[in-house]
Image 1 (tube, rainbow, N blue to C red):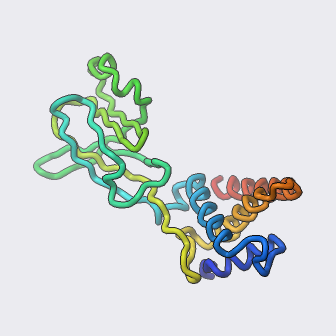
Image 2 (cartoon, rainbow, N blue to C red; image 1 turned 90 degrees about the vertical axis):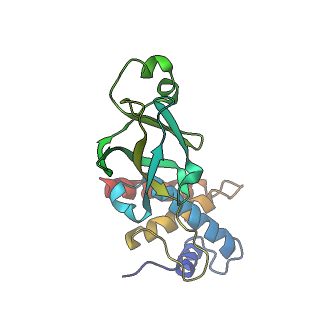
Length: 212
Protein backbone atom coordinates (compact mmCIF):
# COMPACT_ATOMS: atom_id res chain seq x y z
CA UNK A 1 0.00 0.00 0.00
CA UNK A 2 1.03 3.59 -0.58
CA UNK A 3 0.65 6.68 1.53
CA UNK A 4 -2.61 8.56 1.24
CA UNK A 5 -2.39 11.74 -0.81
CA UNK A 6 -3.29 15.12 0.64
CA UNK A 7 -6.62 15.01 -1.18
CA UNK A 8 -7.41 11.56 0.20
CA UNK A 9 -6.52 12.66 3.73
CA UNK A 10 -8.67 15.79 3.41
CA UNK A 11 -11.58 13.69 2.17
CA UNK A 12 -11.32 11.20 5.03
CA UNK A 13 -10.94 14.02 7.52
CA UNK A 14 -14.05 15.70 6.15
CA UNK A 15 -16.02 12.47 6.52
CA UNK A 16 -14.91 12.03 10.13
CA UNK A 17 -15.90 15.61 10.90
CA UNK A 18 -19.31 15.05 9.26
CA UNK A 19 -18.38 17.82 6.86
CA UNK A 20 -17.86 16.06 3.52
CA UNK A 21 -18.68 19.18 1.52
CA UNK A 22 -16.20 21.36 3.42
CA UNK A 23 -18.87 23.82 4.48
CA UNK A 24 -17.49 24.09 8.03
CA UNK A 25 -13.80 23.35 7.53
CA UNK A 26 -12.28 24.35 4.21
CA UNK A 27 -9.69 22.18 2.48
CA UNK A 28 -7.11 24.85 3.30
CA UNK A 29 -7.91 24.63 7.02
CA UNK A 30 -7.81 20.82 6.91
CA UNK A 31 -4.43 20.97 5.14
CA UNK A 32 -3.00 23.23 7.85
CA UNK A 33 -4.15 20.87 10.60
CA UNK A 34 -2.77 17.83 8.77
CA UNK A 35 0.62 19.53 8.43
CA UNK A 36 0.56 20.47 12.11
CA UNK A 37 -0.28 16.87 12.98
CA UNK A 38 2.68 15.57 10.98
CA UNK A 39 5.05 17.96 12.74
CA UNK A 40 3.68 17.04 16.16
CA UNK A 41 3.84 13.31 15.44
CA UNK A 42 7.44 13.53 14.25
CA UNK A 43 8.46 14.98 17.60
CA UNK A 44 7.02 12.13 19.65
CA UNK A 45 7.88 9.08 17.54
CA UNK A 46 10.91 6.92 18.22
CA UNK A 47 13.93 7.47 16.01
CA UNK A 48 13.21 4.20 14.16
CA UNK A 49 10.18 5.78 12.51
CA UNK A 50 11.53 9.21 11.61
CA UNK A 51 14.82 8.29 9.91
CA UNK A 52 13.82 9.93 6.57
CA UNK A 53 13.82 13.24 8.44
CA UNK A 54 17.12 12.83 10.25
CA UNK A 55 19.91 14.92 8.78
CA UNK A 56 23.61 15.10 9.62
CA UNK A 57 25.79 18.19 9.70
CA UNK A 58 29.54 18.43 10.25
CA UNK A 59 30.74 21.47 12.17
CA UNK A 60 34.35 22.61 12.48
CA UNK A 61 35.01 25.26 15.11
CA UNK A 62 38.09 27.06 16.35
CA UNK A 63 38.55 26.21 20.02
CA UNK A 64 41.73 28.20 20.58
CA UNK A 65 40.12 31.08 22.47
CA UNK A 66 38.01 29.16 24.96
CA UNK A 67 36.95 25.56 25.56
CA UNK A 68 33.40 26.70 24.74
CA UNK A 69 32.41 27.19 21.09
CA UNK A 70 29.05 27.96 19.50
CA UNK A 71 27.23 27.25 16.23
CA UNK A 72 24.01 28.92 15.05
CA UNK A 73 21.33 26.48 13.93
CA UNK A 74 20.51 28.87 11.09
CA UNK A 75 23.70 27.59 9.47
CA UNK A 76 22.35 24.07 8.99
CA UNK A 77 21.78 22.78 5.48
CA UNK A 78 18.15 21.89 6.26
CA UNK A 79 15.78 23.73 8.56
CA UNK A 80 15.66 22.10 12.01
CA UNK A 81 12.33 21.47 13.74
CA UNK A 82 11.93 22.65 17.34
CA UNK A 83 15.71 22.79 17.82
CA UNK A 84 15.64 18.98 17.97
CA UNK A 85 19.24 17.78 18.04
CA UNK A 86 19.38 13.99 18.30
CA UNK A 87 23.02 13.54 19.19
CA UNK A 88 26.50 14.99 18.70
CA UNK A 89 29.76 13.13 18.10
CA UNK A 90 33.12 14.74 18.77
CA UNK A 91 35.67 14.04 16.06
CA UNK A 92 39.42 13.67 16.26
CA UNK A 93 41.69 14.59 13.37
CA UNK A 94 44.07 11.70 12.86
CA UNK A 95 46.37 12.18 9.84
CA UNK A 96 43.80 14.45 8.19
CA UNK A 97 41.03 11.90 8.68
CA UNK A 98 38.20 12.80 11.03
CA UNK A 99 37.24 9.93 13.31
CA UNK A 100 34.08 10.40 15.37
CA UNK A 101 34.29 8.31 18.50
CA UNK A 102 32.93 10.30 21.44
CA UNK A 103 29.25 10.96 22.05
CA UNK A 104 28.68 14.26 23.78
CA UNK A 105 26.25 14.58 26.69
CA UNK A 106 23.77 17.41 27.18
CA UNK A 107 24.49 19.87 29.96
CA UNK A 108 22.49 22.94 31.08
CA UNK A 109 23.83 26.05 29.36
CA UNK A 110 24.53 27.85 32.63
CA UNK A 111 26.96 25.14 33.72
CA UNK A 112 28.40 24.76 30.25
CA UNK A 113 29.45 28.42 30.09
CA UNK A 114 30.57 28.69 33.70
CA UNK A 115 34.35 29.17 33.77
CA UNK A 116 34.55 27.42 37.13
CA UNK A 117 33.16 24.31 35.46
CA UNK A 118 35.31 24.09 32.38
CA UNK A 119 38.46 25.20 34.20
CA UNK A 120 38.09 22.23 36.52
CA UNK A 121 39.79 20.06 33.89
CA UNK A 122 36.90 17.69 33.22
CA UNK A 123 37.49 15.50 30.19
CA UNK A 124 33.86 14.79 29.37
CA UNK A 125 32.54 16.62 26.27
CA UNK A 126 29.17 18.33 26.59
CA UNK A 127 26.78 20.39 24.49
CA UNK A 128 23.61 22.40 24.86
CA UNK A 129 20.93 23.65 22.45
CA UNK A 130 19.13 26.85 23.33
CA UNK A 131 17.70 29.89 21.51
CA UNK A 132 18.88 28.76 18.09
CA UNK A 133 22.47 28.12 19.15
CA UNK A 134 24.43 24.94 19.88
CA UNK A 135 27.11 25.44 22.53
CA UNK A 136 29.95 22.92 22.64
CA UNK A 137 32.44 22.16 25.37
CA UNK A 138 34.87 19.45 24.27
CA UNK A 139 36.66 19.29 27.62
CA UNK A 140 39.95 18.33 26.00
CA UNK A 141 42.17 21.17 24.84
CA UNK A 142 42.06 24.34 22.77
CA UNK A 143 42.52 22.76 19.36
CA UNK A 144 40.19 23.14 16.39
CA UNK A 145 37.43 20.56 16.69
CA UNK A 146 35.01 18.90 14.30
CA UNK A 147 31.57 17.76 15.43
CA UNK A 148 29.05 15.53 13.68
CA UNK A 149 25.53 16.52 14.68
CA UNK A 150 22.38 14.61 13.82
CA UNK A 151 19.18 16.61 13.94
CA UNK A 152 15.53 16.42 12.99
CA UNK A 153 14.79 18.46 9.92
CA UNK A 154 11.55 20.26 9.27
CA UNK A 155 9.27 18.20 7.01
CA UNK A 156 8.10 19.70 3.74
CA UNK A 157 4.49 20.78 4.17
CA UNK A 158 1.78 19.01 2.22
CA UNK A 159 0.77 21.47 -0.47
CA UNK A 160 -0.38 19.96 -3.76
CA UNK A 161 -3.17 17.39 -4.01
CA UNK A 162 -0.79 14.48 -4.68
CA UNK A 163 1.62 15.22 -1.82
CA UNK A 164 2.06 12.52 0.83
CA UNK A 165 3.39 12.38 4.38
CA UNK A 166 7.15 11.78 4.80
CA UNK A 167 6.32 9.12 7.39
CA UNK A 168 5.41 5.51 6.75
CA UNK A 169 1.89 4.87 5.50
CA UNK A 170 1.04 3.20 8.82
CA UNK A 171 0.90 6.67 10.35
CA UNK A 172 -1.58 8.20 7.87
CA UNK A 173 -4.60 7.24 9.97
CA UNK A 174 -2.97 8.63 13.10
CA UNK A 175 -2.19 11.91 11.34
CA UNK A 176 -5.81 12.22 10.25
CA UNK A 177 -6.99 11.48 13.79
CA UNK A 178 -4.68 14.10 15.26
CA UNK A 179 -5.97 16.68 12.78
CA UNK A 180 -9.55 15.63 13.59
CA UNK A 181 -8.97 16.19 17.30
CA UNK A 182 -7.49 19.66 16.88
CA UNK A 183 -10.26 20.70 14.50
CA UNK A 184 -12.92 19.49 16.94
CA UNK A 185 -11.23 21.55 19.62
CA UNK A 186 -11.77 24.71 17.54
CA UNK A 187 -15.52 24.47 18.22
CA UNK A 188 -16.00 27.44 20.56
CA UNK A 189 -19.28 26.01 21.88
CA UNK A 190 -17.38 23.18 23.54
CA UNK A 191 -19.88 20.66 22.19
CA UNK A 192 -17.11 18.57 20.63
CA UNK A 193 -14.65 18.80 23.50
CA UNK A 194 -15.36 15.29 24.79
CA UNK A 195 -15.14 13.76 21.32
CA UNK A 196 -11.87 15.56 20.69
CA UNK A 197 -10.47 14.16 23.93
CA UNK A 198 -11.56 10.64 23.04
CA UNK A 199 -9.93 10.86 19.61
CA UNK A 200 -6.74 12.28 21.09
CA UNK A 201 -6.62 9.65 23.85
CA UNK A 202 -6.98 6.88 21.27
CA UNK A 203 -4.15 8.41 19.25
CA UNK A 204 -1.85 8.51 22.26
CA UNK A 205 -2.57 4.86 23.05
CA UNK A 206 -1.65 3.88 19.49
CA UNK A 207 1.54 5.93 19.54
CA UNK A 208 2.63 4.47 22.87
CA UNK A 209 2.03 0.97 21.53
CA UNK A 210 4.08 1.71 18.40
CA UNK A 211 6.94 3.33 20.32
CA UNK A 212 6.96 0.36 22.68
